[in-house]
Image (tube, rainbow, N blue to C red; front, side, top):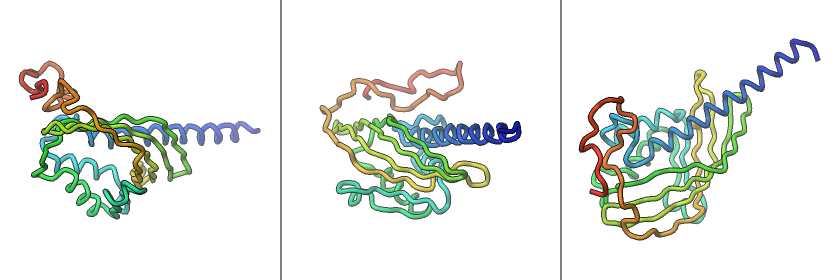
Length: 198
């Protein structure tokens, strides 16, 4: 193998590693923005949160739930406007009971890069706590697709199916923040910006 062939091989391998890292961050950011309370400091409404999520998607993206449970619950949304409407139904302004806590853990990662396109599979777990005390934990499997758009990786497909849903005891969490201050600038006053269970 010539020196140029070696360099070309190394460049391709580095490009794959960089793509995997970008996609990993992209998928993690999606989950981060879906958490409640939203950890992105300064996001004061679900409308803002939804727009930040939509920034992660290509214009022709698809969001769909599949399988016996998710097909009827979530259905299929094609394009950003339909995906925006999907998330608006998920976070309605008059949500009752209000969602107090929702956090996402990603596991079992597989990322496969094919030039400027890629796919990835994960399982994610998320506990839910509602204002009326109803609590559950949901496990879902993801099969997502990605594409480089103007040099930036975007989500082109979110595809999810149910693995399991289990009830948790009412008010299973004894403390949880009303608002996340994790990304607030250091050295500022955090007083009264979070409260246990209230």
